[in-house]
Length: 231
Image (cartoon, rainbow, N blue to C red; front, side):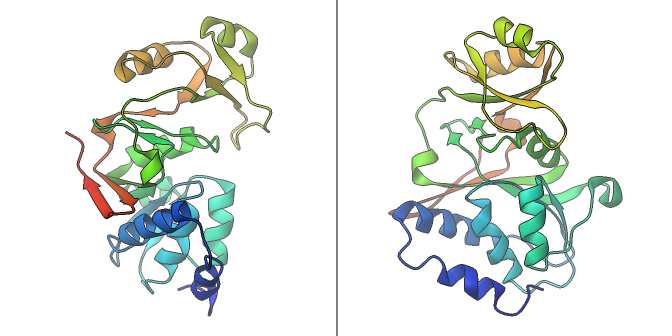
């Protein structure tokens, strides 16, 4: 359970929050309610997941085990008393919950604004149910650049040239030592671009998540909560 007052402190910090923050919180609370005792839970990374963690801790569940996708999520989860484990220890996940930078009408996602997309994709792929939480402005008619990349450091300039236009971000490497970059060209058909990125040597992982990976999208807006099931 969360340390006494942890969830309350988080809720209090939202006083006067922007509409976007209120939407993120609403989507996060709805997703937290999908988690039941006994579940193995994947925890994503980012500003919307920051609302999920106290909402989940506030449920008071006594028999869940969680896998974090970033050091920041791991730190915040520990502070809230959420029990952490690893995929190798759990053997799989019942549910994973994460945010998204963009969601198109077909369920394609762009993720990785925080550079955690490799770990996020591993955790999402290991879950029986992958739930995406987002505020209304993340819903787009079609995906657009930037598309986050994680690159092998060896000859990264060559990899970037192969994918031009693409550039490194001025950020530290990923927790696993990869360089964080962005593809800046036209996305067009996401499946075609994902295939190109998948087969480019030097790309560890990219931020395009296919609809087949997504079980449910929860988008909170001014008119309430919208539930989308890709496909």
